[in-house]
Image (cartoon, rainbow, N blue to C red; front, side):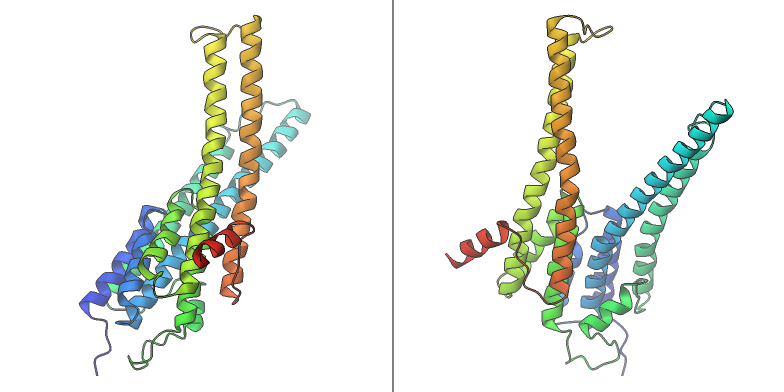
Length: 301
C-alpha cells in the first residue's frame, strides 16, 4: 500500500513551513492547515503543528540568542575599553572588529532561523516526513504520531489542542503578530473545543494588554521627543537656558523615564506567557491572573 503523502497533504505542509519566513505574520497558516487536515491527514496535521511550534518556540529561542549576542558584545566592548584605558590606548568598537563580529553573528543567526523552514518545505514537497531538530521527535511522541500507522488512528486530540493553545501563549513574545495564533485558533476551532476556546480567548486579551503597554511606552517616548524639540527649538542648537527649554527637558526626562519603566516591565509579561504555555503542555488548565477569571465569567454568562 502506498503510504506517501498526497499532493494536497504536501501542499499544506509546504505552505505551513514556508510561512515561517514571514517572521511572525505567518502564524495563522499552520493553524488553518491543522484545522483543515486534523481528521483528514495525520501527515499534514503533524507538519502544520510542527511548523507552528517552530514559529513560536523557534522565534523565542532566536530572540534569546540575539539578546545573548548583544550582551556578549557589550561585555567584550567593556573589557576591551577598560584594557585600552589602562594601557593608554584608544578603543573604537565600530572600527576595531567588535561591532562587525556581533553583526555578522546576528546575520548568521537570522539565516539559520530562515533556512530550516526552507529545508522543511523542500523535504515535505518531496514527500518526506521532516522533523525539526529538538522539537520534531518530541512533538511526534507527544501527539503519538507514527507515519506508518493506519490512517484510522488519529493524533491525540487533547494533546493537539494543548499544543495549539500553548503556542498561542508562547507567541506573546512576538510583538503584535503574536496575536494571530490565539485569534486564529479561537475562530477555527473554538466551537469544537471548549478548552481551546477559553485558552485562546484569555491569551488574546492578555496579548492585547501587553501590546497596549508597548503602545503606551511608544507614546510616552515620542511625546517627550516632540515636547522637547517644540519647547527648545526645532532648528539649530536647543535652547536649554530659558524657562521653556528647561520645561521641555523636564518633560522629555519624565516621558523617557515612564517609557523605560514600561519597557522593563513588559519582559515580565513575556515570561508569564512562556510559563503559561509550559503549564498547558504539562496538562494544567492555566488561568492568567485577573484576565483568566474575567474571560471565564464572560464565557459562563
